[in-house]
Image (cartoon, rainbow, N blue to C red):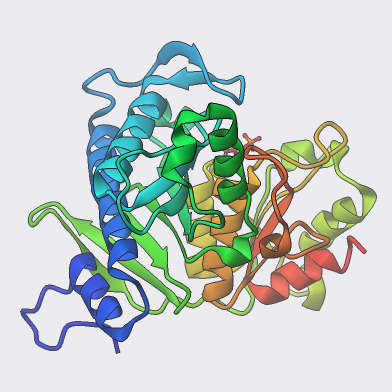
Length: 345
Ligand code: P6P
């Protein structure tokens, strides 16, 4: 089983990746991609921690494809991710929340992985010192990103979008890094979920949560109830039932919502319960993005024994039609996701 064999062995992400490579769970190329993402997260963690004192918060002026003001840290975090992935030499295409279109990476020379990421999700919370996170996933190339296409921008773009728009079930890796009271790197390569906590004294992510499993159920619900009036009737009835103990009655549920997906998700994974960002009258597909938020998070939750659905279908079964496509998301303990779905038939 994963973990130190002696009291003084520091079981780091690097050690874990080497053992997974020996087991054949990950290729060397994928291990290099994951290591480059971990490096990006270490850098972003440091920037987020120092944001308040190095006035990296506040608006940078440019608006991203989401039409939101980009905070300086969004822009910087995106550049950090792109630089690390380029220099990994194993990344063929990247799709970021901060990039209008997928980007072909010329520096790739093997592996050619397709990496999707939200470099700094929840960044509007940074000024308030609330936790934020990076979310990422990787696919094998679905179409060889043929280098000769590089000089035909139209063909190259079509090829990149083809590579990026794969269903979440095809992900070979997914993870997130939570920047909070501690910096926690959570990862799956489809053999369970493993958590690594950053130890700044040695500059490494150390294995702290081997084989994470979400509790079967949990009386914590994480929704923005401010949207209640715009939700469909079934969902309102579900929400009302939680106030009187939900499926089995008894103790009412507790509401926990920090408005930052990675923080709300990590608590749900550890303590059980459900996180939801439903569709509503204004936005039938909700707010979260399929490719680099809902699919990676759903894979992690399923690998931990939980579920991730839109309320009507399994998130990992959806093949994206567009890079920034939104879908509703309900993710968490299997019993809790089943319960909300019973109201949405
Ligand atoms: P609302 C942050 O902007 C984010 O993308 C997620 O991190 C978070 O869960 C959600 O949006 C919060 O959205 O509408 O409740 O403020």
